[in-house]
Image 1 (spheres, rainbow over the protein chains, first blue to last red):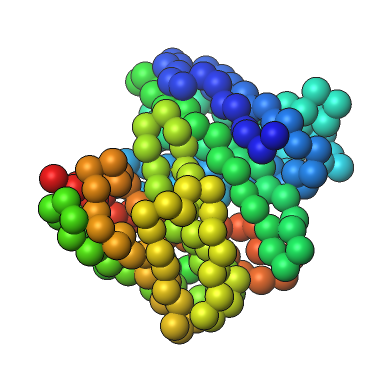
Image 2 (image 1 turned 135 degrees about the horizontal axis):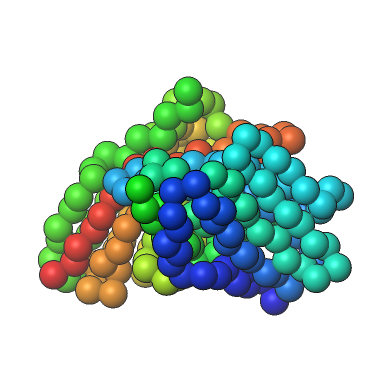
Length: 114
Length: 114
């Protein structure tokens, strides 16, 4: 099973609050878990990524929490700002012979209210 | 900065037309990808290429073909456009080696097939 299930579909958060987006996967062959951020009219851009040998990675206000046994990972945005309003995609990538494959979640539209 | 340029931001075509979507990257990346983005479905991989003149089918290749004659250019071809191919098309590239999982996206081409 190569799906990546992402929730919620949309999220409204007050400025200064915590935004939490969750993802789940089935295939234990995935070995790289990136999050992409997409602003309207732009392509997705890598925000933060984690490998399954660590349980947490933090970059500024953005943190990935990774639970290998539950096959779940989540993005936490601390002190959410209106400028964080965007669509967020989780993804899972696995190494293949000669290359790799990335499966994306369905996306979460985040709106941060000022 | 890596730049992935898609030749058109918006395209309107008629059913049955042959459509070419062009993508150029300026960072000498080995890997190039074509995705389509639809609301609620995330990004789905159409085709990818790990080298010049090489192509591999992704998850939804039906109705599409690709061409990679030069390393920097990856073209997506809709042989006979249909209304169900109305979508946002995203091109991406990634380097080889340890950073191969990091994909850089273009701004997208919004295609409408009437």
